[in-house]
Image 1 (cartoon, protein in one colour):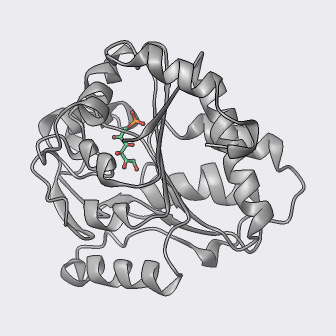
Image 2 (image 1 turned 30 degrees about the horizontal axis):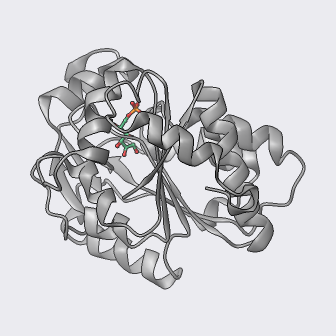
Length: 259
Ligand code: F6R
């Protein structure tokens, strides 16, 4: 089962995860980070900017989880642009070492296998940051995704397109398809860190962490991972049955252990 850490705010979640990433980079200057987009990882990236200001991060490598298919990479909401704006530029990473799945329609049938091969060639992801969709997706593995799935094209659910319409001028502009790391790909990362905040995520978090293992809730795949950490605020934790036990466990955890 995943370790669940309940914190008081999204900012506190960001600090906790940034601390773990900083520790990782201190051990391995060429650490491989699995990067998520959307709103959830932003407090992590903000905390990293403060914590690692001035550090040489030019050897750190990164792999984004997903990209929209058919979006112009220069579009401000393409995940390539988001990763460049939120992670690569502010942290001073080497853009050549930070990869995003190629969402170009031309050649899309090979893009997934090529991306998985790149991750393998890099030696795998050390720490994968994850958000979770209100429908339980991680990456863009929508309900029904196989736990064995590899990076491939998926159709976004209407719910995900509605959730993501806030980043675009209208829902019609939200692409219909995406290319996403598969659940099998994500599970190969050495440490999974899933974050969620707010009441709107409470059902998805409870289903992923405490519900049955089912492709209907792709986030439940984290239960198969030997080192998965779930960092949630009180609202996102509000439907967890064992919340008191998670608090008690974390309060009594040896400080050297990290998350
Ligand atoms: C983003 C991603 C998605 C998001 C999820 C939650 O790369 O893979 O799984 O993490 O849709 O989105 P936010 O964080 O915007 O609520």
